[in-house]
Structures are given as structure tokens and as C-alpha cells.
Length: 283
Image (cartoon, rainbow, N blue to C red):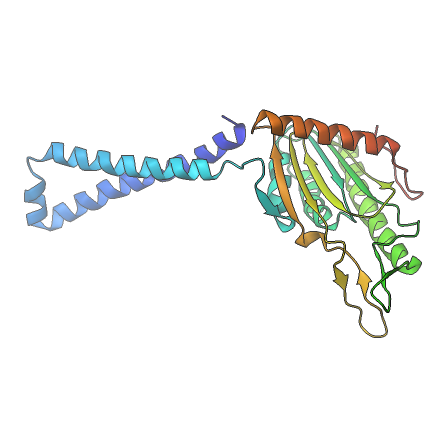
């Protein structure tokens, strides 16, 4: 049984106990004030025990159903806006490694920023953090992101690409700044870095502690409507992207897939170019 599942069971088992105690309390209270009920209960101890056993069985079955429902199958889907759940879970470990490949990483950045900030006051079990972002090389001409042409065809827009690069630069500097403060304080060592990969943002990949992978495909035809005189842009919306879950706690095929994802990302990371504005490097 996985550690995550054990924690969830630990959370829900006291709830069952509370239900049983409440049931016994209510029956006893009614028997004290309503004589017919008290008389009916006298001499029927075994019947009461049987009833309690039935109640316990029903509640136990419900908890088991919940337990099964909380197991995430290898091909379950989640919304990108649910990334915070996986970030929180990742930070329960002593060593945290989060890798991202996608567009700008804004959705993940928002979750990580507050989580890293919190480590300054309460690091919990976490002692080492490594965060890696792979984003498109916005310095090169691109079909996505791009400006929507008169006939719907993509038109490269250098100014728009520069705005996206600036956004990534800000994310990188904020996260690496927190990481440096954490490392200087001595309680947690942390490092965060952005790098560039060539091509358009097609896949969205998040890898948590090398044991859980979320993978989805951006809608590359998604448009951001510009306010006049701004044009429309082909601009994938990462927070709307559905993500498939692959977990090492599932089948052997899932474990093999996760090993492949990790190997693929590591290779891309080694080949990726460091932007001129990066602060520090990761090994």
C-alpha cells in the first residue's frame, strides 16, 4: 500500500470512529428520556451489539469504497488548475524534484512560488528542492505563439515573443531568488532554473519526484483575442489543458512509461540552452 494511501486512510479512519460513538451516544440519550425506548433496550444487549456491528460494517464498506476511489489509475485525467494538489504532495518528501516542459509554466509557477515561500517559515520534512523548467526558445521565429493573419494563418510576431520571454525571465528570477534565500538560511537547499528547447509548445509535461508524470497536449489553435488595435494571437492556454496521470504505484507498464519520461526529460535538459538571463545553474 502506498504512503499516500496510508495517509488518506489515517485521515478518514477517525471519522468512522466518530460516527460509531455518536450513534451509541444518541441511542443512550434517547433511552434516558423516553421510557419505552429504555424498556425496549433492556434485555436486548445482543440485539444492540448486532445493530452496532451492522452499522460498523456499513461504515467500513463506505470507507473502503472511498479508499478505492482515491486510488488514481494510470490514465486518469486532471485539470491543470489542480496542479497544486500534486505540488503539495511532492513537498511531503525530503528530496523534492519537479520538472516541467511546456509553454511558460505559469500555472505551475503560481503553485511553486507560494510553496517555496512557505518553506522559509516551516520547511517540514523537505530538505532539498530542485525545480527545472523547459520552455520554447522565444528568441526564434515561431508559428505558435504567433499573430493570427488575415486569412487565419500564423504570422510570427517578435514583440509578442519578447513579452513571453520576459514573463519566463520574471518567473525564473523570482523562483531562483527564493531558492537562494532558502539555501543561504541553511535549512533547505534549493535550486530553480529555466532553459530553452527548440520548437513550439505542443506537450505539457510535469514530473513530480521522478515517480509521477502528468502529460497533456496544448490546444495550439487556441486564440487570445486582442483589444483593438491589438491583433488576435495563437496563444495556448495552459491552465485549460487536461493532463493524463502516470504513477509508479500503478502497473508495470506505467512504471516503464515513467522511466521513459524521466530519461527523455533528462536528455532534453542536457541539450537545452541556458537563457542569457539565468541565475545560477543546475547540475
